[in-house]
Length: 100
Length: 460
Image 1 (tube, rainbow over the protein chains, first blue to last red):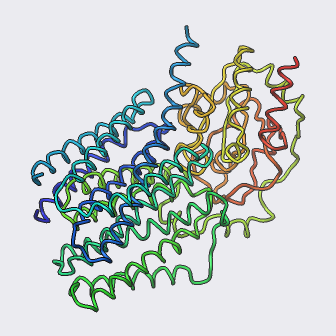
Image 2 (image 1 turned 90 degrees about the vertical axis):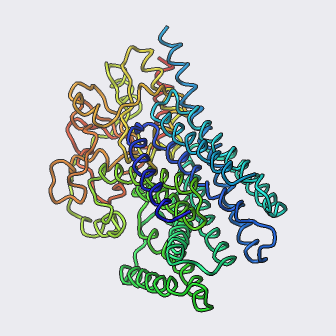
Image 3 (image 1 turned 180 degrees about the vertical axis):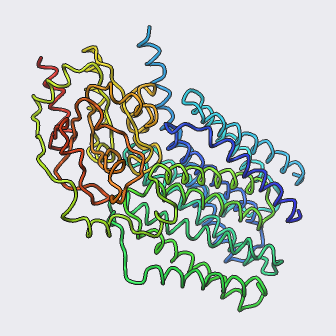
């Protein structure tokens, strides 16, 4: 793919990101951050795709490390975010219950 | 699996990420949003795995080890340790982007100029994210001093590092495939790792919300740059979303402190002011209160606003605060929690802690909502917060925090300040609030103090 096309995608995604995130209330800033953090583990996709058979040994080592770290980021990030948001959710039921 | 199909699935993943982030804008849908985003990640991983010609044994090894560590960490972590956990995960994302760029370069050293530039960016931002996040992790978990660490010529060292990096990058981009180019790339990696440390170490504990947001943004940029290196759309889109998110949060945090990003990053806030502001600052007599005094004040109040700060997290007092809040509500007192945007060590830190203690989120109010009606509040209870309630930010032009928006607790009829001692806060400045006519100091560990109030209420 040509660089200009990728840059095009990049610029649009930046604008979209600004649009989306500016609507998040401050209550949810921590989950937003850890959720976004989990998304940044997307490098995992690249790391997996780069692990071709027949790579140099050193590339394979670097790639394996990249996969490992990115997996920690993805798995840990999503699970921690879910744990936090679960707490926000539980309460909502409770408030409804309390109002009745 | 054809590349066309894989890319088509990536489009779906990107859409799921976008929906997921969109649903994070309300507490009611946030959890489903996160699950959608995770689903997007999952299908992207699966479709990538089925592509032909991959060296599976290493991939599986890496994913198994990483997955195990990730699950273990995510399940074990205490809610109060969330800031350092996020910092840690963030750092891992960063180093992964750096390693990916390196692996790609090692495999295909003949890079075009454009790819050489993005490989450089990916290595630099990824490396900085990694060591910067590790320093932030160390500071937040108390493994290294939270104080801002300054040494002579720090700016000179940082400037030197930057010049080296840019110089090395320029040479590297001109001829990446030579042995010289490879050496330069390794140099760039090392310099980036060093710069992460030297640029984060001077930043003090209370400025951590800014730093974490910024590092979050860097990790997105690193992923994005890595996406350019391997021409992968999904990395670019997801990285850009994260980069934008981090930038917005950084901006919000800076605004909430009325400081520019440059000031947060370079000033070593806290150390300098502590020295010059040592003796002068507001003085006067404080009015200490016992648990019983505070109990009578709270018992008679119609409205109580809790103002939590980092001290609440340190004392792990969120559960007893919620208990006290319940007792007050049972006593027909209107209870709310006013949260300053930079209270705690990361954006929204206090909200998460109070959510953990089951405080309903409609009781959490933002600074801009509580300030206009502060005059009608009977009692403000300040728990382990200091600079975010310092009235000097409003009226003392010589104060280093002048201009920072605060929660104007001094306008409430009575302010009760829970504090361990009279030590000044992070900014090293004395707080005029403590000497105000309507303020009562309630000394002690936040958790024990509130526990005492709870038992006063219960014995009643």
